[in-house]
Amino acid sequence: MSIFGRESSRAEGRFEAWLKRMHRERVFSGETEPAGPCPDEAFLQGVARRSKKIRLSDPRIDHAANCANCMNRILVMRQNISAERRKLAFGLAAACLVLIAGMAGWSRYEMHHRQMIASVVPVSATVDLWSTGTFRGEQPAQLQSVSLPSAAVRLTIILPRFSSGGQYLIAVTRDQSGNGVIAEGFASATASNGQARVSLDLDLRSAKAGEYFLSTTHEQDQAAYYYPLQIKDCASK
Ligand SMILES: [Zn+2]
Image 1 (spheres, rainbow, N blue to C red):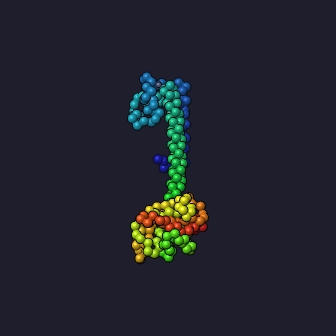
Image 2 (cartoon, rainbow, N blue to C red):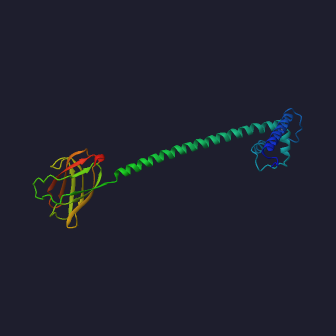
Image 3 (cartoon, rainbow, N blue to C red):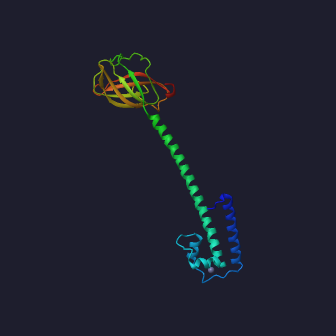
């Protein structure tokens, strides 16, 4: 470390570089007398890589510093080493880019995946059939505002008065004969506040907005009751 600060150390560096260049010129012009034979390739590689295994007191260092042949070999090796390091740095940078691109792709996939899951989270809906007639064959009175969104729906149906307990088949169909089933599922009736109700998930995402029928069929009764149902676009629910 220099007490003269940065400027001075830069000047020292320049002076050292000049000394090295002068020395190299002397070596290459054959003005120096290398002592002993040329060391092997492995040793010169060690010098070029500034290996810590090589001690500066090693007489082969002294030879290499004064031998035009060895110095030339070391200079070529150093060039190759820095080219290798550049390549390695470039490779690392490329790997980083690939990693970043991969992470970006993954996070996009994750977001998409999360949106997919979010879109499948069922919409809760309740249909109240409590006041509708349960007389078989009778066209039920037009239900007021019975509509469901064209989405995955977690549907709760309050069954008509006097409905019996047990299993029900719940379906959304195109017509009153049970044709064109959009979605269906079984659910057990549970009593709550003196009313029988069934709850189930119905996937109505494939249904286009329009007029449909909601049907309930009791496991023992086997007769289906149809109720007019309107499916609305998810956005305009
Ligand atoms: Zn030599």
